[in-house]
Length: 150
Image (tube, rainbow, N blue to C red; front, side, top):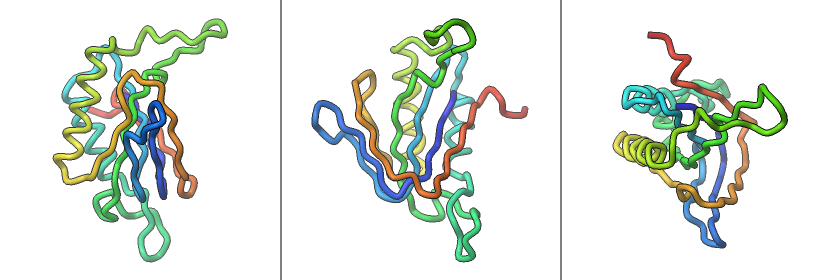
């Protein structure tokens, strides 16, 4: 699984003119799923993001997690994180999981995060979405479960 994480002061997703998910302080997580992903990838990635110390402490240092600040998470499915642009000018998405697998993993990820006490919001899987956010910092981090150490 891949995630592009952005620390935000606010964010929302709109589908067909309707707000499907919105948060104040927290993280926007663009989540991509590949065919090789397992439950272990999902758990590892969710735990890493929830406990990532990227929020400022009293001294202004990035030393607090999403749980520490009581922040929320807006999770948006993003198969294009597996776009391969090495050849030609049109990305290949062959490594992205098929929709049924990706949707199950995406929903399981959201359920897992919520089960850890994090307020969650979502977009709508396979929908044409409009995401707006105010990146706080800016802080943007890329995490790939395939790159984790054993």
